[in-house]
Length: 388
Image 1 (tube, helix red, strand yellow):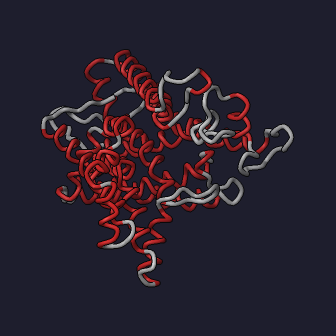
Image 2 (cartoon, helix red, strand yellow; image 1 turned 180 degrees about the horizontal axis):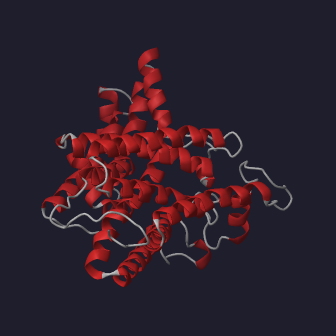
Image 3 (cartoon, one colour; image 1 turned 90 degrees about the vertical axis):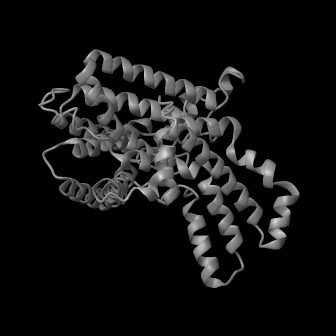
């Protein structure tokens, strides 16, 4: 038995250890939409308008799924970020386990700290770094949240048994629920989860330093980072399940499906009291998003790794192998803005006139996405993996 932590997971021999292709593919799938896939869907929604009740309804429904809910609820677009956090948790198991085997616990802890600091630093640069005044620096954000979730989930994984991880997960979700439910907000009271009328938003508005994303609140704020770590731990549980040799691949798929099928309804049931809200990452949201993540991982693991149908997922694997790099580069140069240099302006207007309004926008997003995929493929084929 491999003793990463007391009574941890079964060791996979070096000679037989293989990479889980579905993991890179799923990571790439989540970033795919941010690199331009979402914009292409928005354009298709525009293009379908006025094309008959069926086409218009389908286009509008899909377009709606690529817009965050105003506050309470769950759509596909609300799933993208927690899916990436979940996959980060799965990756923790597959990256730290062999590292501990080779170099020991001290090296693993140093690696985790170094990666977390690098990710957090990239997050600061992503939102402008120190180009603005101190009060305009965004100290929290997408990459910063990934860094914090990776840091604490990794430290918990390295130092706790599987039972201890489950206890930590429960404490994070129940503790956050208790704080949000029973701690009164000045001037408002306790047990409220409305916009700008809840403990998480109040803490951000009064104590979060730097720039707040939505002026009075931040979707990656201080208190809501606690349940987000829980989302990452769900990924750790899934990774531990995939890595064990006690189960056959088919049994692993069934376990993933079973867990997901329990988490989703449990989350919605909890949501009756503690609503499903991404903006404050409620505990019910963790269960719903985590449940769907388990189900999607089960599907992709079955299709890609168990059944061997991999070709269709190639571009997702390319993107997933350098996900953070592509995400960061997109903030610096924007693949969509690069595409507009070729198909923007009058070219885009001509496409709108020749086909239908929105076509120019659609072509620009697809071309930008093609640039991102081409870069991802170039890096992958030359085995250039700029990992953090």
